[in-house]
Length: 229
Image (cartoon, rainbow, N blue to C red; front, side, top):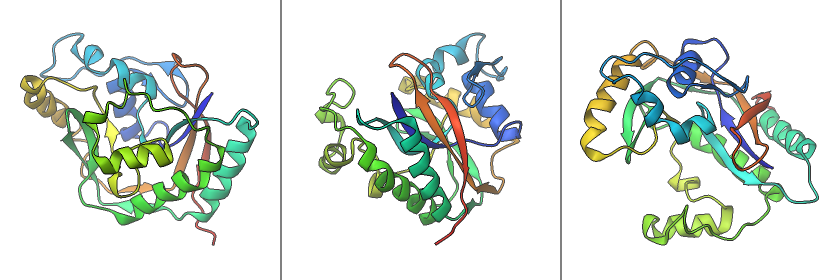
C-alpha cells in the first residue's frame, strides 16, 4: 500500500470537473469519466497525452505517495493526517495559470505563495514517521535527472521535490515532445479559461491510497484544514 496527501478540488466544482475531464478519471469516486473535447487537439490525443497522469488523478501533491511501514495501517495514516490538518490553516491563492513545468503542462499558482509551501512541509515532515525507507529506484530517479540537492532530498525524504524544491502544481499531461509543447499548451490554456485566474481557497486535503502498484490512486478521506494551534 502507498498513501499520499493531495489537494483535490471539491466535487462538482468547475475546477474539479475540468481536471477530471482532462484526465478521464475521477480521483475521489474512483471512476472513469468522459474526457473533455479540447479544441486544437485531435480525437484521442488527450488520452495519449495523459496515460500516466490519469492514474494519479487531478490533484496537487502535498505529501508524495509513500510506502507504509509494515507495522502501520491505513488508520495510522488517517489519524496522523487528521491531526496535521487540524493544525494547518487554509490557504488562499489569487488564481492558477496553465504553464509548462519542465516537459509537461500543469496548472500553477499565478504568484509564489509561501503559505502553500508551509502546508506541504507540515505533511512531508508530519507523516514521515510512517514511511518505509525504500532503495532508490534509478529507473524512476536516474542520477543525471536530479540536482545534487534533489538527490539529497530523495535520500532523506523519499522524494526530491520537497522544501526548497517544492512547487505546487496540478498536472494536466504526461511529458510531451518539445515540438508539440506549444500547441498542446495553447489548446489546454484555452480549455482552462473558465477556471484559470480565479481566487482559490485550499481548505481541505485528501488522503489517497494506491492498493497495488498498477491500481489508480483513490481518495479515501477529505480532511478540513482548521488552523488550530
